[in-house]
Image (cartoon, helix red, strand yellow):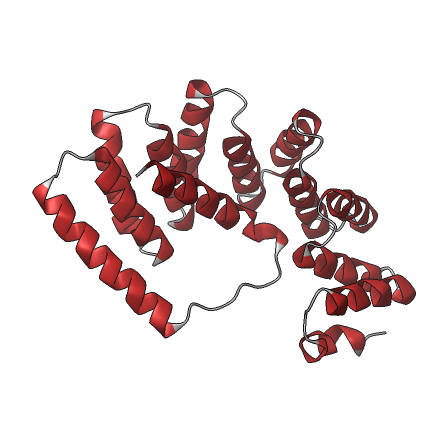
Length: 232
């Protein structure tokens, strides 16, 4: 169960970082069916042990992966009724609330988590991204700046700030931050593709081409990059 929880943490961090990606791969039907089968098993197991926090978190994780936000939230509600300081419950319910458009509730969960674990990287990141999405731009930027200062070796922090800057039209600053992210995670295809978009907006086609060629070297099929190569 401990190994599952560690995987669960990584999964949600990946979800929170989706703001720096341009697209995500669709879930294959087979994967969807596998998850539904696992959910059925978890639901049945939970019916035998309804007081098990680990089993409830396991089921909620499957609800999240299937994008069943309300069901996931309901499970985390149950966890938090009996364990109000449960880190997983607060963190993942914040994400589910965000997906449900319940931004104030999501914000409260992140803030409560930060009271339990001050400086929690993913909670700070989630809160900054939430405020950006909710158009609290100044607050979001202050929070992400603080996160970058606290975790200067984090490629994710720099990329998240770049995504915010890109959304707000601060193109040069976004280029700088994606470059800093790539210094820390040189082969990250998502960061490279985002920087390609920025180079093209700035009219720096040679630099865009260099990043596109790097993507091909990393194994991205050239036909998949046709849209960007045509803009050179």
